[in-house]
Image (cartoon, rainbow, N blue to C red; front, top):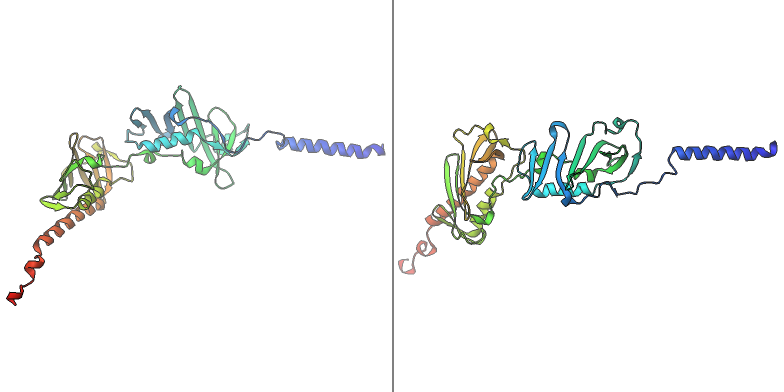
Length: 324
């Protein structure tokens, strides 16, 4: 019996080792790092739904780009929606955490923190659920909507698709074609100015301008245009109907070489001014100080022109030799 004892001990060790290895999934084929979950082409994504509950954002691709259908029909920055569609189609995983989890709640996936759903051109849906962060910094638990396998994914990648309504908002307040602007009539806090492009056929930075009757250099006129037209909001707009438009402090008409003039008005609300087209559905928030800065620039140009006209020329200021 003693001569079989070493063999018996070795057999027990091998069986124990095999059982341990199997329990730790040593024999399971590992998922390749950076394996794509969906492998969907961006152009095939026709609708996007992001978020959970009241924070859900819904986007739909149209012939003209994208439109938002929830939470409101806010104007959409097309490139932001395109970027999410592209990132969703190339979501990758760092590895498998659990192929058959007994409790998805342990991973924050029973009630996911974020959910992203894409409707494809063929009508099928792909869903990604985003859960809790892993103990390892920079990674998060995720799973697809049609399977229970829990994966590990990189936070940087997930940030590209974990977006809110603000991230998709077209933040431009004055939507006009820059080089087609031919005149701006502006009233702010009771003061009025008219900025006119001298040669509407030229680009903004090539044409001379007029501020009232005062001639402006191309860089002066286009500088005011830049400061005004490129103002943007940093928050979701209010519905126009939610703003009291009694005696608006801002009135502005932007005339372009094509189409009807764009007419805006604005109402001061504490440190903000709510700006809306007279026929538009939303009022966008700007800092009242931004409009003050535009007004200050216009006053500065007026003052500079007036000072230049009032100052005598060198010839008239210097006495002639005969008069000395």
